[in-house]
Length: 150
Image 1 (spheres, rainbow, N blue to C red):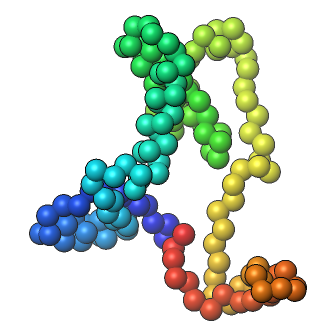
Image 2 (image 1 turned 180 degrees about the vertical axis):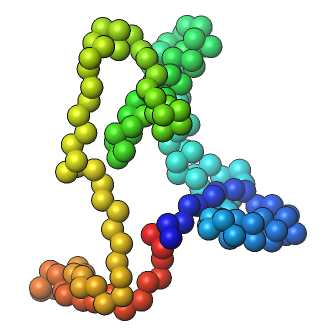
C-alpha cells in the first residue's frame, strides 16, 4: 500500500492521539513540523519563494491582478513528473488561456520514457549498492527486509 503523508504543526496530546488513530485507519502517515520554522516544510518554503520572485518580477502594478495572473499560471503549468497541470488533476480538464486561442489544436506530447518510474522492491530482489570504500564501485546485494513503504 502506498502511504500518503500529512504534514501539520504540533497539536495537543489528546488531539494528536485521536488524530493519529484516524490517519492510521486511512493509511496516512502523519508528520509533525516545527511551528514558526518555515524551513521545516520544504515544499511550502519553495512555493513562498516562487511567489515572491514572480510578484517581484511583475513590478509595481495592481497587486490583485498580479496575484490572479500568478495563480492562473501556477494552475495551468504542467507538472514535470505527471505532465498534467493542477487544474487538470483537480477538475479533469484544462483551463483555457490566451495561448489556447492562438493555437487551439496544440497538444503537448507526453514522452513516456522520461516519466519517473516508482521503484518498489520485494524481499530477495537482487540490487546493486554503491561501494564508498573503493573498488568495485557497485556491489551486488539482496533485499532482506522492507523498512519503508516508499
